[in-house]
Structures are given as structure tokens and as C-alpha cells.
Length: 75
Image (cartoon, helix red, strand yellow):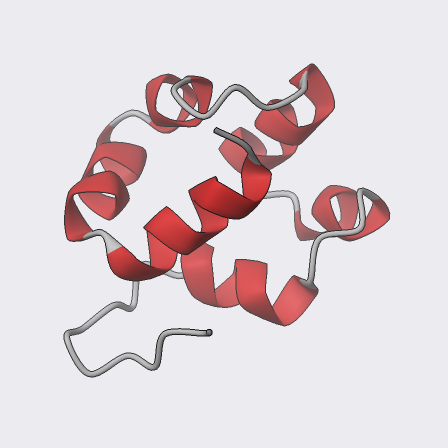
């Protein structure tokens, strides 16, 4: 797994979202990202994620916690 799979899971899988908000480090670790990526996601550091080339709007939505069954899912 990787960062793209993590972001997608955060947008589409309520279980992963719940896991992340209860245990960010443990949830991120399941996706096998680099240490820099993992640290940025755990810290919710949007600037660091942008420097890693991750789309800021997508990450903001994924990490917002404002999910519902009507959220648009990127294709």
C-alpha cells in the first residue's frame, strides 16, 4: 500500500477514517509509506504533504473528518 491508497481510503472507507482519528500513527503505518510521508500524515502537516507532491485539496478533504455518505469521491 502507499500514500495514494491511504488518501483514497480516507475518502471512501469509514473504518479507516475512524481508525485514523483514534490512532493516526497505527493507521498510517498499515499503508507502508516513507517515514516523511507517515510523519506528515500523522501530524496532519499540509505544508509537508504539499512538499511531498501530494494534492493539497485532496488531502484536506481526506483529513478533515467531515465525511458523510454524500461526500463526492474522486475518480
